[in-house]
Length: 111
Length: 116
Image (cartoon, rainbow over all chains, first blue to last red; front, side, top):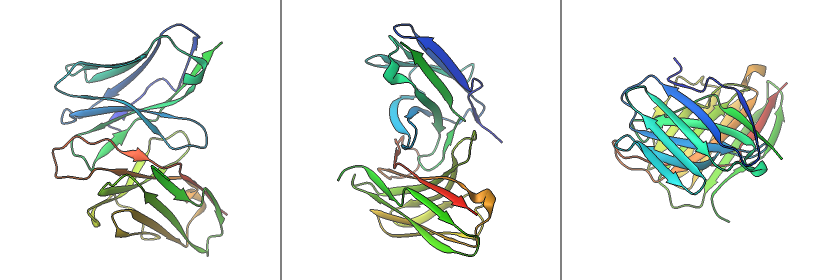
């Protein structure tokens, strides 16, 4: 049972434009959501997180939005840079020992 | 050295071999995790250790055997693996606390395993 889904396996955007990565979840118990970024031959790197008591969290060029009623979160990157090209995973947890991950979206930012 | 390290980075083994993966975290964390990532699939949680005690075993076959001698080190012992076990094995750590806390897990670079 895949509780966290990233339905777009890939996304391509032009440098300077906005990248929007989406994630849906099914378990209403999830109360903490994270985005990780992964380059080839490296482990996932923590990017940004949001608690279920918030609907937005911003860190520089990265903003995560949470819509609890729709069980949907998104990551906005603006402006996108070629160095942002990587695989992005969303993750959700309701217990610090039980984190579920999406399958990832490969973002390509074209110069 | 900082962060989470894993050795070896790459491993090729036959189905009759015995090998071990090692993970070490330098973050002062108390919880450590093993994940498996197969191609185009989500990360699958395998084992969780919290304060050196195993708190989760997600129906992992017995050919995978974890060991956590202290809060900084985690091993995954492998024996009689199958070709379908070929994957990227990731170790992660987090602060470690009781349930209900919201923690961020920090990952190592992974061990790319190929079983022939």
